[in-house]
Length: 378
Image (cartoon, rainbow, N blue to C red; front, side, top):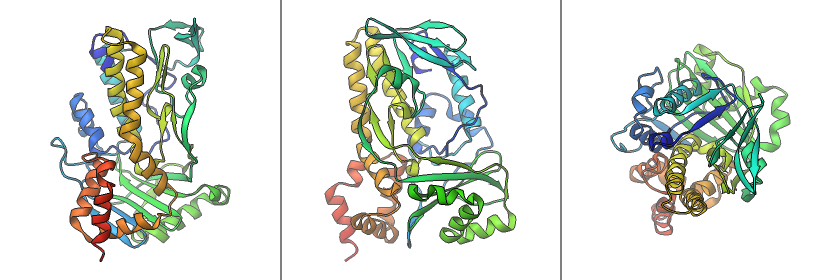
């Protein structure tokens, strides 16, 4: 969409046909919504039946933090639309910008010429050539595999997730971490509430022996009030969906004639729910750099290298933080920070502004700010 709006011819090939669901907890922070607002797509989202979220409860063991972030560019809420709601909005935006969209079309390999990616071949026997091929095709990216994109930084995955959807619940956003387990709850589209649990990856096989029983027990242990509401008035309306997380990684995301964006190039533990918002930001950066290369403002390889460097710099602290809390056992210093957040409204507001994207991890976790928070405990 962003490249087409700059006047470039763009072909979008997707094996899915919208509306189509995908494994996703589909939460969008304010910094992601700011992107949608600037692109002219936010009104389409807020016009759906996806409720606004204006209250959050985050906890670690007995340390509970209630609150919400300050408004960001006039946005005072967050949303968690089902992907069957969000993805068609994005696709409509691309079509309106002039993108040629081919749904139900699967890419099977890249076209290589003189050491460069020159296009794609599709499963129906078609060939399409382009000056650049962008892989936005997830952690198992075909574009990454075919281009030989190596992973240059990795932290092993610590957990797995199971989730499903209920009707009949009345709750706000929760992310509640206990000892070796986490429960996430938030309202989504169609009058539904998503409930997700996380547990250490070495409990995967044990958990799968009784998914429903084990799932509901985690909810009961961590958020008994919500568990009681689920039992008394909730109705599960979809199957349980489980996923072992891929490792946290940075993958080389550019080369001659190709680039990667979203989970194809960078993935961190989903516990912070920043995947969609990050993908929006990185798509915008990548579009700007590609436009520089196509226009001749700078060499394409240099422009794409700048994209990867900026992405890595902007995500470094969030990457480490997600991997740390994704282990579901906080180191002592970070546990003290959570204690301080639960006792001080100013610190809690800063924390929610960090989640919203209004302040950076480097600012929040700066040594002097960490010392100020921990020092407040006496």
